[in-house]
Length: 454
Figure (cartoon, rainbow, N blue to C red):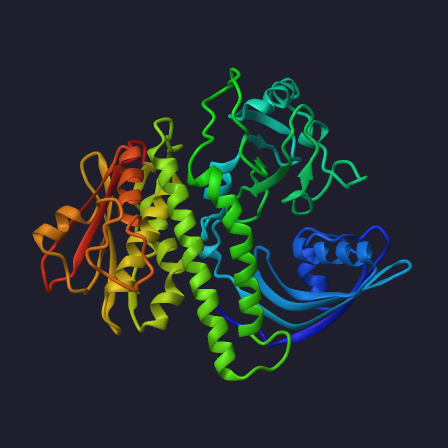
């Protein structure tokens, strides 16, 4: 990633939260994210701050983060309400250019959690029209039936966003995270929208998920389209923990980066420790949520034709900064290598991110990590090799065990990554194995079916 210089900009909105004036670089970011000038704000963090300022009649300020297809930005935003709208000032604007090959929807596993928590999911077309619907929550039966009968219509006709007077078409960024009106249920539901498309978000349509504010209270079960996965860490604990932990991390990052003003170095270091601990807790929540998902008897991936070499290159690209911080050289497959395979793209990437992340963690500083792909008889494989201390035979037999950390302490791991990765590999009709010896590093191999037409 290449960091841009720190700059600031001013902007103005009207009484309907439409951005009517904006200086660079805010104007360009708004337009790249799908907005118009003048037009509705499409950056969720900034839109939330503007609405809060209008609602309370008081100035609001906080650190914001956002991302489009080209850049990830962070800034300090100040919003001052007025009679006809608000004045916005963003300062300490920092932009990091995203490497195109590393732009994938689930790098931070956010959508894995959303999918697991959702009571209803739908596949949408490019105009957010309904293509297919499925649901598990019994209090959404009426909504699910109505949406099935309304294929081809905008999903907002059936679950209209609250506090919005505007009807479709609305930009998906404005709808992502909004609360929706769902008749026949006592719970509050929020819409989560996942744009599809490898290059331009939304170019292949969208996935819609309705996520509840709480589990459904015990009651006689009604017939639904599939089992209601209502118990466990995912439903019960994750939603309760994620929001306050995320707020702690955001506030700690604001202090660490000194966006709110200069600070003594020791306090900035304290904030960095708090943020790191929060990230560790969020990773544990994600691991436990994913654990439930892969152990569900109804769990099954959605295999597609993929290029295993391309997925390996993406995994190396995503973790390149982490490797560079430790002086480790990553050796991914070359650009001309292509290994056609059958597997779910995001699950295959998830496994490789875990393997490469482990290799970086346990290799000595200044070492190397290799990703080598191979096409066998009916199989496609990728091997991740490191220069760590390696595993003896006893450790190799235990390394895929749930919660097994092999006596390691303080490395931030949960002992679930390899267990989950093996379950994902097996769910894709593949396998995950290890070969190692003490003092000779470790070699983890993911093997999935080859694409017979590749």
